[in-house]
Image 1 (cartoon, helix red, strand yellow):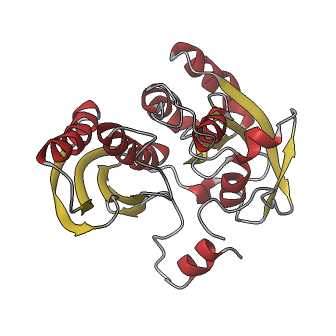
Image 2 (image 1 turned 60 degrees about the vertical axis):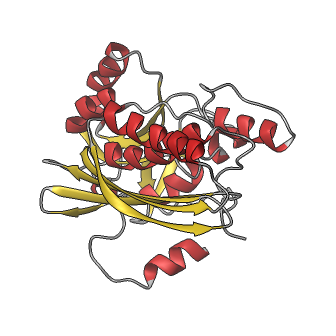
Length: 272
């Protein structure tokens, strides 16, 4: 058991285990976005940092078929930040909130040596899509092409630069497609720690995976993709493919669930 799983296992609430906690018709989700762990300030503008910190959390809400309504923001602000830099941060937060129709309603700030951001999203949901809905024999699919985020990260670590629309800098969320496809989906989560690691979470009910197409190690282990990973009954394959075509989404149906247990082949991203 990894450190993340171990720590989470110390809390016994029945709402823990999905991308967000479903309570009534609300979904509550939180993400941390920390300097020198998730990003370096030399890699991205402050506006881009704020935007990505919002997007990665909104991605969790989308994966649960929930629509964000309100946002709480916590920020550890380096004491040497200027008012101009604070404006850059706030501009990034408000731009994404506006794009997804949610309101920033509060939060907290404190001073520190590095920039750390905590985002809490409150979303409305009628029919949540949870990981526990996965069934034996479900087809497995993901949106998009995987691997670009890790390629971008490797370039940054070598001292390179990325364009503003690079996957690692600005995730491209597939909200419209997934909200429409969710009625046919049994389980889902977004790919934040790599396809292999997130498959192990989706199949936590002791299900195995049979791959029907070749998936490279790069595709399996590229984190921070924020594409949708989901399972569905084979009867809905044509409907889901047609929706992907309608929304011009690249869709890969790469396998199906079996009896057994799936173990990730990738290293932990943020723990050593």
